[in-house]
Length: 421
Figure 1 (tube, rainbow, N blue to C red):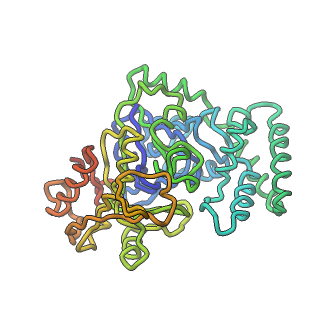
Figure 2: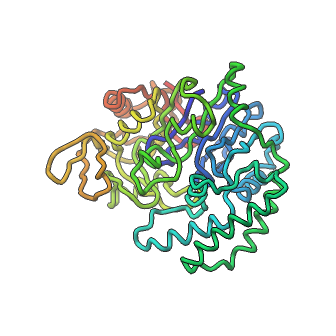
Figure 3: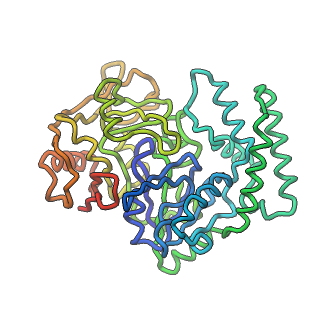
């Protein structure tokens, strides 16, 4: 099994890479996260955004598995499947869902909104999709799982969990006026869910591996949002790193082959939290505009900044990355000079190239190396040999610093604008 994951704060372009790599695989499996993920694929001039369905779904001979580590919103999944009907995708044949995946219920979304509102100006920037509260219930061993919808007493189990949630919501004095409408959509989606392939996905994945088939595990969000190793507390609720693929699919570590690490040629972040290289000036604004840096799930403007090598080295280390893919190199076309953060300066004047526990303070200053930009369009480029010298130098410098080969460079949103080295 090979693993593909983001090395920054998410939004690195994983959907596009899965789509490009998918023909080499028999199975594509999502292992964590929920509908807060927006994986954007673009081909034949059409843009597609997937939230919960693995990005191999547009290839008819690939099996797509939603693993046990995912938290699933039945309503969003139903809408997502309905939105793809025009592509004649055989969902009954090539989409399997783990019975052990946790379900997001309507009151999880209300709890999400209540918790976020209560934090005032200390908000973490939740997408309010109910993901955090669902993972809380999973860890608290009270959550509902996909397999539960097949039980005769599902409604009773559902109601028991809702009553727990209502007690918490009353403490926050949160209005439940939306609940009946949300519940109607939820139960309609649950009936639809029963028509899909609900399986013991850990057996499914391992049977394919044992039969010599190739499996690609697709991560959501990014390594710096990992619940344990990210910029806590401004993180997501799951393990977004390579180890999460083992627990999120039921696959042993010894089965892992390549670990593909995806990063942007610069940096972005959505929501609150530390971001040492963030740009608050016209340069950051130009980057946002050129890269169309607005969330594919939320539409929120992303915070933008220069590439951060200490953070990338950290992500490479905790994931055991074997190959790097650099995305959105074309966004840097507009700059005559490009900056690369090589170290952090701490409040006492010392410099480090490691992420410190206190990275969450605003006192960490990036130390930059400036290199010349290529300042030219890459739209006609079809091979690495055609890259401008400055871009080749940028790739080489990053490879030397990071110690892992950059095997792919993306120079535009389309499937075709992906240059393999």
